[in-house]
Length: 185
Image (cartoon, rainbow, N blue to C red; front, top):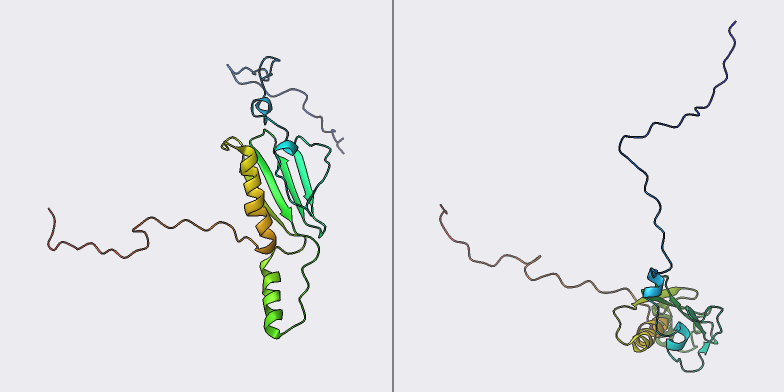
């Protein structure tokens, strides 16, 4: 019988290719600003966040320079968060836990109330929108418009996304140009 040899791991590193050197890792010096420093907002997010009328309540945050939250007595929530790099502000609205009750009445009134409930953002569901900060000329006004014109209406009229742009003229249309008779040389 023969004795089995144990497997010995290879301890020798693979050979290097000729003329290839390793570059040292890039390091930022104290004098080179980072991308985050270049795109800082002029004011903390909680200062430029829009004012919402009662019953909306602005919550205290651990990071007021980056996050702002609002709550509604019915359980709805609105959030604003400055994304890393300061390039955009993510906004969202979450519907509260309950839908409005369907009132007692005629079958037509009940159907209208049910249709209104079906058209709204369902309980616990969230709708997001993003504001790009470097393209905005008046950041506070644009953020207020986004909250008032896109997020708040999402509670009662569930957004379906953005409509697709119309195709350029001539695409998908029948060709109506007159055809020349004969052959071309």
